[in-house]
Amino acid sequence: MATDGTFEPELTSAWKQSFRRKLLAWYKQHERDLPWRKSRDPYRVWVSEVMLQQTQVATVRGYFERFMAALPTVHDLAAAEEQQVLRLWEGLGYYRRARGLHAAAKVVSNELGGEFPTSVEELMKLPGIGRYTAGAIVSIAYDKPAPILEANTIRLLARLVALRDDPTRSAGQKRLWQVAEELLPRKEVSRFNQALMELGSLVCTPRTPKCDACPVESLCHARQLGIVEELLPTTKKTTYTDLREAALVVRRSGKVLIRQCGPEERWTGLWDFPRFGVESEGPLFAARELESKLTEVTGIRASLGPLLKTIKHGVTRYRITLDCYEAKHQGGRLKSSKDSPAVWLAPSDLGEYPLSTTGRKIAKLLG
DNA sequence: AACGCGGGGTA
DNA sequence: TACCCAGCGTT
Image (cartoon, rainbow, N blue to C red; front, side, top):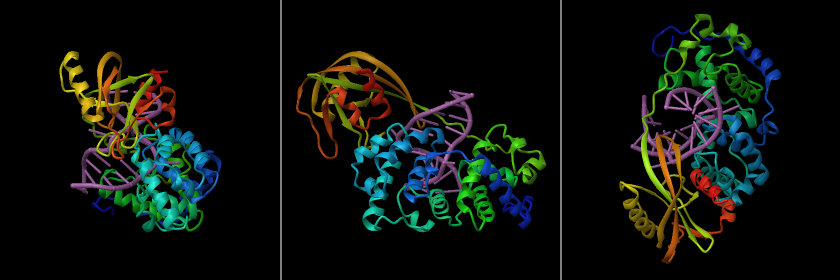
């Protein structure tokens, strides 16, 4: 019986054994050559898992290789400037991950002598490591029998046991963690967990899963019941909020002004051109408003010039229309502090700073 | 037990 | 645009 009382067949020992055998045999033939699979160094596993949080494999690949080349050990990461870490993360999104990774590296390097915790419980005390990432690290790096549950395995396991509950809600999640635990082999846990994700990713896909090519088709309860397509999780539609903002390219003798985003704003820790919400209607009023806000935030007085470009940018539930203006420096003394740094920079030096997505787009416009 | 995160890529 | 992604931290 499932937790909600609906019928859900028990997983017999023979069924589980058969599943493990078939899955591992399939993985032997279909394992992708991914850069984080070159070794089981826990540092590499950890970095890759954090990068892969809510981020697709294809996106992470290049970032991972560049990151490992620049910071090959946890000590290198711990000793690095946050600016460098963010620069390596630029474009990957969810930048809190990069700051958490950096903070956790300092703990491991300085307080744990470079030795990663080997238990799920201890790993979860580090910032940015939740139940999935902790389970992934101990199973993949140490072959310890810890279950994992993420996008691929949620889908795979939900179909495998024909889960009645919504797999995104807590009752369904609880059941799936239990299944993930129950299926674990005693040996080869590292390969087993990676094989689960690989199968979910390559065969048990969200739409039109390739059941004909699935090594465990004969064991799949959803397949037997003919309800594979019906088990798709219900997607809740997001309601977007439109925002209007403006960014200023303030020029002073060949240099431009950028500032670092603070903890209360989007792209915390990254740098950006001075950027403000626009409340006024009409370009004339907006000009006065922006000049005034620029002085308020940076201490710099400037006169608004022509519109450089309008950038449409979506981020989480916001849809931003960003007007980018040229602005000519008039005077004032730059306010720059530890809390709120700002610098004048030659456009050619913008590559050395981690910029927000829109900041990078503007930087490219400047040539 | 949900839900926001001030992401980003893709069909 | 909608949908998806090797989730986490917070309320």
